[in-house]
Image: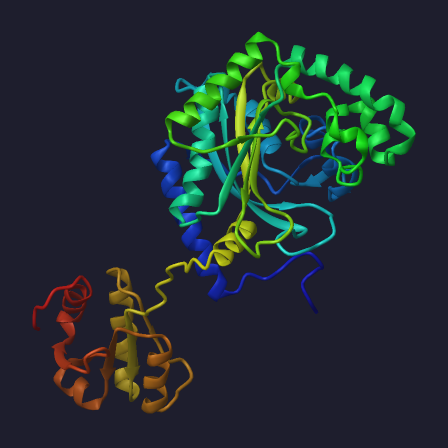
Length: 427
């Protein structure tokens, strides 16, 4: 029996790295005043068909969709934004007194695609969404939050690429220009792009198959079709990023892979040596209009999704060690029936008072138990034997120094709390 293709087990030695980066990002979200949201693992398929877009590869090729026993079509969540917006609409968060609503999430996503390093069929994302503000400052804040996550984890080889997809008027102007430009070459394009040319011509620019076609080189740029409002909006986003000291490049061909984007679109990439051909770490943008698609009132929104697997790959590529304190506070060795019974209460009391402790559960000899304490890198070893039980003491050995002290059992909790907090008091 093996894990399904495109999925991996995250073993304990790796899980501590995940816990570290997740804790770091939760702290950053708290500083930016974002609240956590948790949505179901699966949704009604319509949420993604309407929210992500029928012309996207996700909807057309990659979704895990099934019927339940009631004949309803359900889909394992392939991305986070549509689920969050559905929840926003369902629970009428647009009526909250505090606006905008700023949310973050950690969630597994599921996409049926060819597995490769950093791109699995079950992937894990960190994402944020800001709903209820059309201020360009919100765009800049979201980008700043994403960059802060990478920088505070130690990444340096980063590149931020931004673009404007414009408002509906600008997009329609650009759409028509793309249709006029690519139609003479339609028969030379791949089957997907022939369909996209009719459904969403902007997606032709994002095609991996036709990326080297000569028509791509001089395709109409969205930046040449921005109206005054869209151009002014984009200039404000860029000016805010500059004020925050965030370097960026403008790429007119950056369109992102989802239909709901408009105005600001961005990607953050790794430029570290050896990272791999697929350099994108995170991507996002503004999606005014998505809440209406999912049955809610007109509500502007902006957000991003960040792959945790790719973040860990980037940290490895830049040789950044993730601090993982696996040292055990205490390990208890009990010898004899009476000591074994006494250890049950002592361990319980220590744990209830915030002290991390483990013990042997395989009835090994004392020498083997000391070896186990070494493997766990225990700071202190507590020894209970016949002599200790007669005196109602516990022998506490500090492993780093080898010093040992006899401590009355009733004082063991206070003694170890003091020692582990850096105190030097004696029993």
